[in-house]
Image (tube, rainbow, N blue to C red; front, side, top):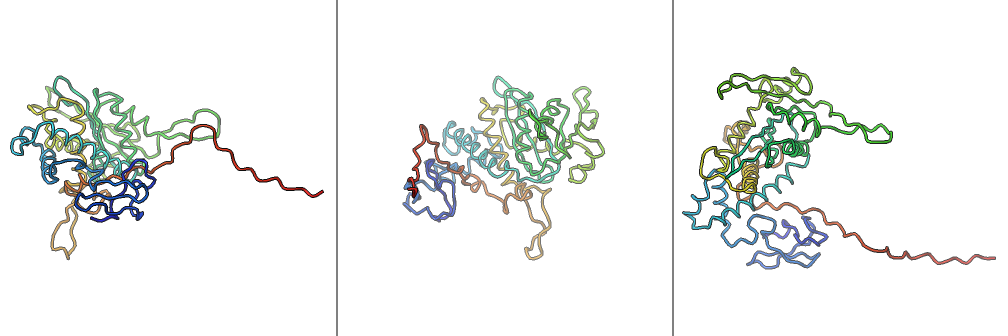
Length: 372
């Protein structure tokens, strides 16, 4: 147990979330607990992870959640492990919340540099209802930029996940490929705008950021079969959009092929997205937790063949496999499922509480005697 690696998790501690402050000491080795010298509180080594306060062995929880990430239904997990259905569902909800926290800390911090983004939204069937689900993908690195689940596939849903795309962007001069849904035009046009300050009074004018390109690939159907695709530019010209797509390595024209491939990955890894099956979700929260678990695992634990690069001569291997997070520069190695579930997201910086009531009287300087 390394006392320098963990950080204090007490909400009122001034040193919470800070690593390397020399304020953590080993409290109990057998119970795996640490103690903070700043606030005097002790905490478990699993604080801030999925395994916090779980009585089941860490290996069992890791295997169960790994099976859930590979499309194994809960009923197939309960039988061999002797667990309760509610226990597995609670683990999945906890893992989904942890995956969302990891995504917010590492991906949605404006550090992802990419030039080509694809987005897609569709309906997901639940028990007795259907909800809308939207995902976004950075094409050059195959990095999943986040997703949103909403009761309706409307402008509110599209706007929420477009805000996720902007939050993770290092630069806003990029090309975006979407399908024929009209809500994309309004959402991207509103979110990717910046105020122009002129020094005059009143609300500043909002202008679309320079270099932003938006294109649509509208599919044409005949008897429920795709007969063709019409490409058109919404922001910028079609020539500029196609040139940006070619430069990013995402094809020769505006398309949604990569986000649809990610859509297939989610359907194969999340049983709630199966078109016809008996393992569909009953609640929207279950679908949301599964989405964040599968998405974070794909970013940090899943190696993509299209991202591999030639290995060095000293390694003895021809290719070096990479995950989307490695391609985006967010990490230097492939994470295991246990490493993802054990990652401790730093807490926000402690802020002193505001003082209420009348401020204290300031000490006035003594009057100096004036010589007459």
